[in-house]
Image (cartoon, rainbow, N blue to C red; front, side, top):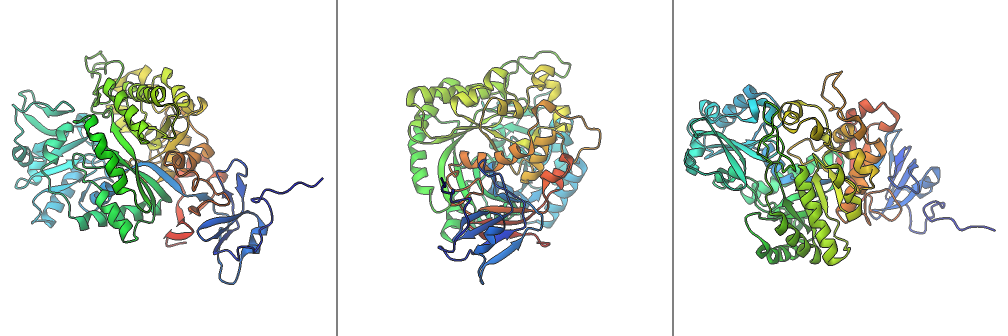
Length: 564
């Protein structure tokens, strides 16, 4: 008895005509469990027409573009499930500090930028690293020495705090008598005077005064960032804040302009910002924004709720208190920005309206509060295809690990952070203690518990390069650390295939793009990336050396490295 062949495995025919693009000489890592490896792929009309081996060459016609992979790996396009492109693009065009960890170098660049821009009312930009300063807290006095005449506002690389000078503090009216906002902290000296570091919501006291970039600058920043992401092999992403937040301008107008002018080449989901100073009264406006903003390759079907801060400034929400510098228990358990009972109500209502909720949940209490909110939505609404996800997940209590699978909540991993480096070793581990320190970034535990893994960079907080992040997920050692650096919780490592799947199929699932992208499968969009080698064939410690040569969206080349 003969058996019909599956179309994907049958010999290609010319019924649809020759292919527009054929990539041969693989390997091809498909991220398709039914056929994980191939050596050739054909593209017609922006869709994958065939996946296989030599038989795919039958689709080469006189006008077909043929790419010889010559042993280089072909993958589905990477998808960044948590990124801030416009903010990153703006930083690159302002006083950019993101590629250094040296305080003296920061001050040199700030002075140089101020001298080069004498007409700028404010000196802005940012991207500095907490580890460059004792206790992660730079001072206004240091900025005053290089820019005494104009206000300076420089968010750090994670945008959970800002470094300001005395002119900026004066402009905002911040002095010893200014109370801390409910969602932030003004760092002070022994006499209560502000020192120049504003944590979380306190940064908004100054950030709201910084002039917005022009629409032209915003569009240029978005396109600059899109170019960087395509160069990293990223073909789709979820913008983790669509709305105005502290120093970050609402990117929505730039997205709409890019769509209108045919300049948005990526597929983008926008996570609409949840204003934590308001409550359920904002939901009607979010529904209206979803309708208004969903055009072309941009959809606004997610809502971003930032439930806590970060561990380094002790605003991440913990179940038990932080330790003090001497290793003693404190009374500080961090901040829950949304009351947990209200969070459950809001998420239930958003879920009923078909919104996905994208949580910032970094500490173990915030993770539990977010999962409790998803559980409340499931109980009230039943299972809906909303695909809620929790980003960051720095500290997760073991009791909550299996709840991701049970609730259908995806784990959105920022893989690059799961390594020993100064910010971890000096500003985090001493204040968490050994037991909680061993619960950080539990990628392996989440995988073993059956959670759906997605991945994102949080750029400009950290590098947008998925290959750098995948290197850390596999090795649990940062690429730039010296030989002999200890492996960070080795039992939480992922294998290379799983890490790639998180950055492709997993993020496609979170973005509701899995019916179109995320794997190299016949019928799906030809969103593809060509690497300069096959990292599966080399040692794990060399994954980070891999570079992107070409990136395609719908079979159209959106990036080609000079050597490609």
